Image (cartoon, helix red, strand yellow):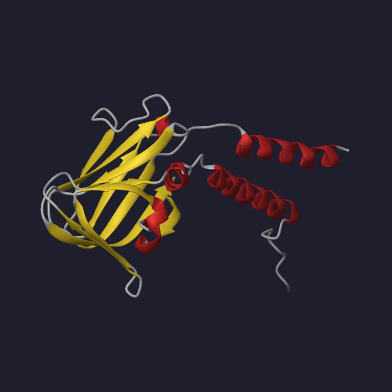
Length: 200
């Protein structure tokens, strides 16, 4: 009787462990460049409380020229509140190229975008200080000819919602932990590692 109760009890405990709300992981947005000049990029975000792009709601990050990338970290407290994104490039004339855009949380890449898709006309709501935007589909790169006067790109609401929806609540990690413990439990029950008597 105890064995019949044990398994459903373990299942309920595992389901509660996986589904109960826990802390949210930070959201990381990374842009990988083919070429870029300048010191930093800035990501502005609007929220349901302050639905405008303002200095109070931004994340600036230095450009890693060695790895040709820039990374933005968004706090877990913003989960469910972000309504839009504005990406600001360095304020100088240049032709910069983007190879890839990734969105990750909880140590897992949730989405990896081809820049030709990420910056496609339907995903770009507005631009400023961008003299030209060329989507080189053959090389899977997006090229921006920027001006000195505050070059930026505002993403569409649909794309912003998709990116902001990538926050991780670590449910997959908790599921993996439960599966591992369950496997250990059943292996222990079968006693496959018990010592066998030595043959004479």
